[in-house]
Amino acid sequence: MPLPRPPLLPALAALLLAAACAHADEAAAVRALLARGDAPAALQRAEQAAAASPQDAALRFLLGVVLMDLGRDVQALDLFTRMTQEYPELPDPFNNIALLHARGGDYEGARLALQAALRNDSGHRAARANLGRVHLMLAVQAWEQLGAQGPLDPALQRQLEGARALVASGSARPGR
View 1 (cartoon, one colour):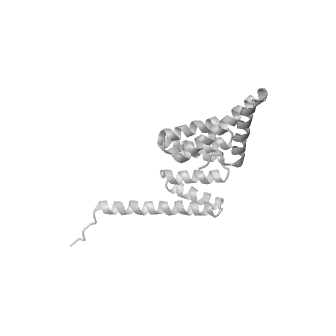
View 2 (cartoon, one colour):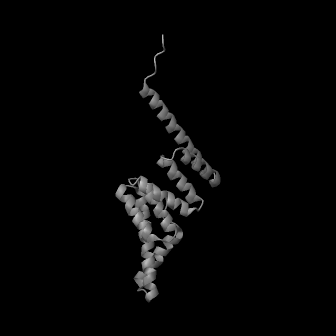
View 3 (spheres, one colour):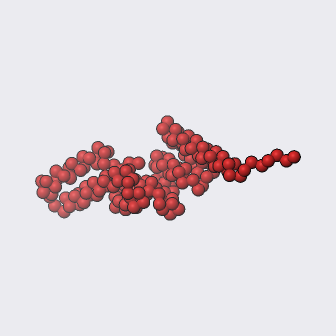
């Protein structure tokens, strides 16, 4: 008498659950390595995980974060840009593109990327906060350009100094 075959659906569900757990384990391991300050090991682990699951957007995003932490901005920007093409509905790659643009001094590019993130998710708190910071940086830039053309009136000079102080304190720099 042949043994009964297990139903396909529960077996498939178990396989998917195991894959999800493995993904979570890999992502947790990468985050732990980053938290310990071992970005090179985090990069190696993230690259392996992303290569093993190339359609896993979360692992690919995490790889981009590791690249950013290592200062490999060109590679991170390329990865996040590809993600926006493959997953245009996700706001986080746009947010990180904005961070990279802002880090490079391209505040207008950062603003555009953040607006794209907010079109995808108007409640995305990090993108909304970063947009405020980028607007402040754009204001500083505009006021400095105006100041280069001649003296600013005292009220505008005080606003510029206050905005510069916020930017210099780090509280106005875009973050994840």
